[in-house]
Length: 179
Image: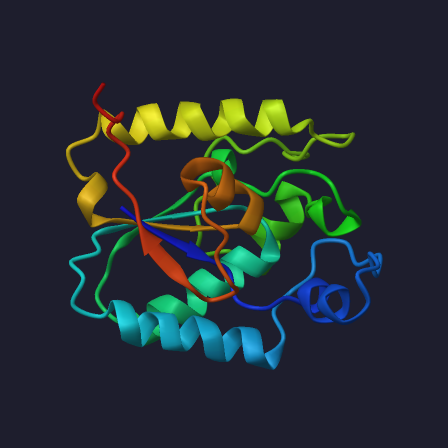
């Protein structure tokens, strides 16, 4: 599968300069973030993507929208809360389902609860359990090779061990390593 970190958000912009949480709840993309998402779409054109899984945060939804405009085609888009960010900063407080549905009426939010993010900081061990659950679920699917996952720094690092910059992607085989 292909794992893509969302484009630069307003949190990323301020935090990278100050290393201080700027206190932005569920930030959207900056202009640079939208450009990164469009560029990712150009880079991934021709990759055979048939399915896109996206975290319910605004920054990933906006990345997916920009990416799909650039990528073209009609891949199936599914909201997948398992691939959300680790709840650590204020930006990891999400937007309520009803507000997301109003902002993106063409998307199906499935059985996403009204409040889908944790109330408190998520221990890294809990995030790692989410990563493993997601990996196992994807390994059992026949279409994982044609799946793009629009996610976050901590989730991608937890899943792969690799840190990925905003708008960057990597390929990942969810099958357990032999031996």
